[in-house]
Image (tube, rainbow, N blue to C red; front, side, top):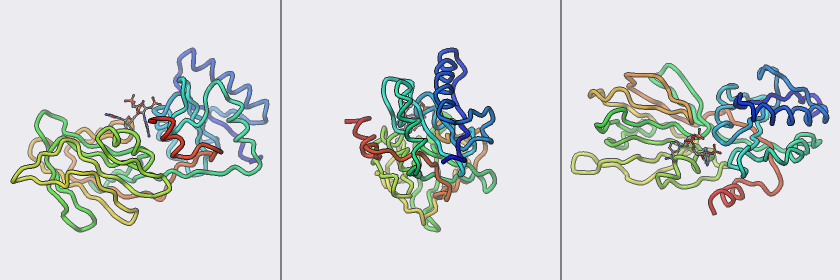
Length: 266
Ligand code: NAP
């Protein structure tokens, strides 16, 4: 790890956070890390905040494949992406200075809108009606027309995102050692004209999902990439599949995904 010691901090710019970062920087420099101001010069990117800050850090730095990401929580607890706590930074330095760092790889979803722009998601892609009316879309799995959906929308989550929005709508929690995406409905209408599966389903990394949005006046659905809104209107098709890009974090002892799930929910 000797040649990978450029550390970049991603955090809010308020006074309290600045002070926390200054303490963190001093400690890191004492252990031989160089603090860089430009994320492109970093090989370790540390978010300071919560899971929301971690999602932003990954997105704003471009889902770097040649970087390790670490989340430092500033609330009273560690969270899904925050393996470290601001009051116990020595454990982060210890993990980063280990001779052989074990890496955990989190799967991401690739989203293409109208065969043009392409984006990555670490938690989920969500699509929801932008107006009071329900909106309609045809759902294809590979080439198969699977269902005609009418309702509020859908969430397509990664395994690490399965404990977020997906879980709030009754989706299953999925082990991130499986590279797969989970499709969960938001208030589907089920009647003699519209019929959906009604339960969440999980697609393997070999599968592709296509959403074809019916242009019936509800052409401005609200689309979300993790915690960022996607500002595209008149969307006709959204294609989703597992990406070969991953988000790398440090693998720690006694901190498996299921330990995180237990400490967050049980
Ligand atoms: P937020 O609306 O301020 O907070 C959402 C909450 O979800 C926060 O407590 C956040 O943790 C937590 N969270 C984020 N990712 C998680 C994960 N993978 N597993 C478990 N909990 C997670 O928004 P935010 O903090 O920027 O987070 C964005 C995420 O919020 C979205 O990606 C989406 O999954 C989720 N969301 C959930 C709902 C819902 O449940 N009804 C609605 C919209 C969005 P921290 O407090 O540590 O940041």
